[in-house]
Image (cartoon, rainbow, N blue to C red):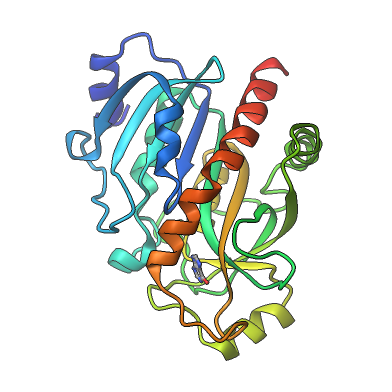
Length: 267
Ligand code: HPA
């Protein structure tokens, strides 16, 4: 058992979350939706990384969402902060150690489609990793050859699309491309990304999905679109936009997540 798991068990002996959530840039407001929350700063959890991004809290929150016990990683550490793709290895191993079986990832992303503009939500159907990095590098044993077919669970995806419709939330589906960052893409890279079949681009999620699949967790991931990709409008890109637009999407995303979480627990 990892040390972080022992620390959490000492604080919350009865905690048994089956569902984990990771909240992306500007989406930390979702934490306020967690009832009966116990907040554990990453600094109190051995081996947890320190986030250096201004829009990210850094705490593990255990509580209830839509009546379901959840463990929320509010604040991710990105590969661009250290150069290491396995920055989230310990938090993911800790979720697994707590008994989490299912994981919902959220992120902020740039859209590659004019008609999927800022404020849109995109369910990730698959990803493309052109970063040359992988969080399982250095892991030993055959488990490292993690299967990535249906990495984003197809049954959950179709259920999420149905639930979004029922809730009146517009949800698109598409391929997420991981760019290492932290600089934004160039317009030429965005044109390349479109040609290669990406629908949105961002700087996170892919390493966490790989780690989650390594641990055998089921994954669902939703991008909140904060901007169109570089060069698609006359505007420069900035992290302010990511934070501000991210925050405006929170009500729609919350509505969808509540429905999804309740449905997962029921079924
Ligand atoms: N590119 C990469 N990451 C992002 C973007 C983007 O345009 N928007 C939000 N996160």
